[in-house]
Length: 72
Image (tube, rainbow, N blue to C red; front, side, top):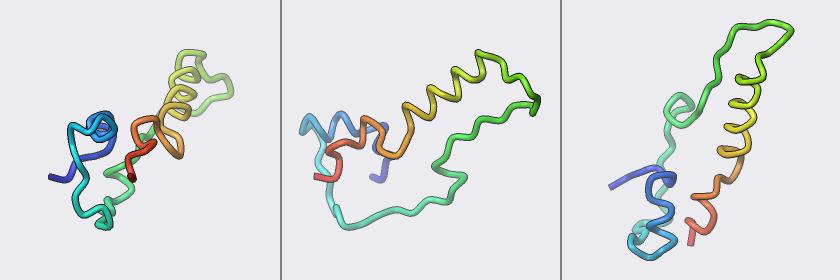
């Protein structure tokens, strides 16, 4: 099966699942693998929205926690 690493990363790290065809890479489109924060433009962004956007950036940045070690 082909699943995103955020779903199976912990299972791969624990050894419950194994990666097969490690050289095979799926290339989804940008709309399939991105998170978008859509909010009205104004000069004063709500602290709640800013906190949510900051959380997403921190959690889903370049190398999310569930991808660490997934390539091995």
